[in-house]
Image: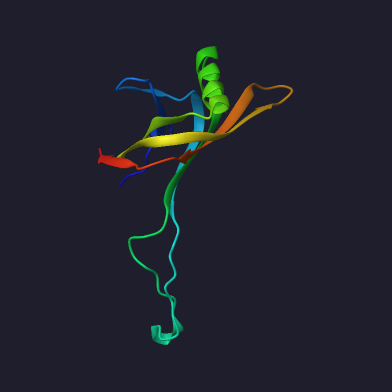
Length: 136
């Protein structure tokens, strides 16, 4: 796969219907998938190597992003989502890979400003249910 444009990795929030709206003016974004392991090693494990139980454990997705809000409406929307503690449907578009959709909760919202620069934000989301994947 050739190199992809970072700006094409998108985080979108459900609009309450069947569509999605891109979240704010993200300059950087990242998604990470993790799974906990279940260790089933015992005294007779071959060579005393750790053994893991397949197909179990808790899976999760974490999404982070930072940038500038493109308008007052997107700033207000994300701030309200955070303070309400809502779990909403999001869509993450990964170029030439696919779309991941599912419920996420906004778990962190940080603002930062430099004396001679714009106000920026950082936000983090944690998955809150089952994810679906659709290849592009």
